[in-house]
Amino acid sequence: MGETDVNSTAGASGTGGRRRRPARERLLQAAARRFYADGVAATGIDTITAEAGVAKMSLYNNFSSKADLIRAYLDARHEEWLGLYRARLARAQGPREGVLAVFDAYADHAAFAYEHGFRGCGLLNAAAELPAGDEGRDVVRAHKEEVEHLIAGHLADLLPGRPDEARTTAEHLAFLLEGAMARAGLEGGGDRLQRARSLAAALLDRL
Image (cartoon, rainbow, N blue to C red):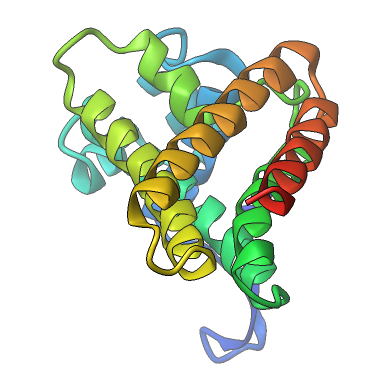
């Protein structure tokens, strides 16, 4: 989300100056910006290497193909979200708040200062552009299943001895969350995610 391409490092090259970030990191950052803002299909290799400030050969030294770069981008986006979730979870008190931490992390994702505004889930946006059977779609599916699994884990703690209800409720909340994310992306803001959180909290209070 607008990261710079250089790091300040004490003693870089023995001078205490600044050094450029590794090419792979700069390529991933450039891909993240362009894929999210412009779409996966519309973003060419030349655009990414120009924004990253590296030669095209450098891209192929780090990624075997554009498809490989897309997969790395998808993994990086999910890890980024997991970081938001872990930060929220660290402040959660009990399984109810653990469930809501998932919703809060989605809202935090929507609150980033994106170059062309919030466009919804970057993973689902990318998956929508990939053909059926593409490995990238499997990556996105696995990530979404992990989100539902996190919700289910908190619900299992909240509803001991009621595993079927915990699984069904986790599926219900995952659908609510992803639907809210889709609407939030269309509307360019996180209001729908806040509303989804309120609905989730009300549902949890009725369990």
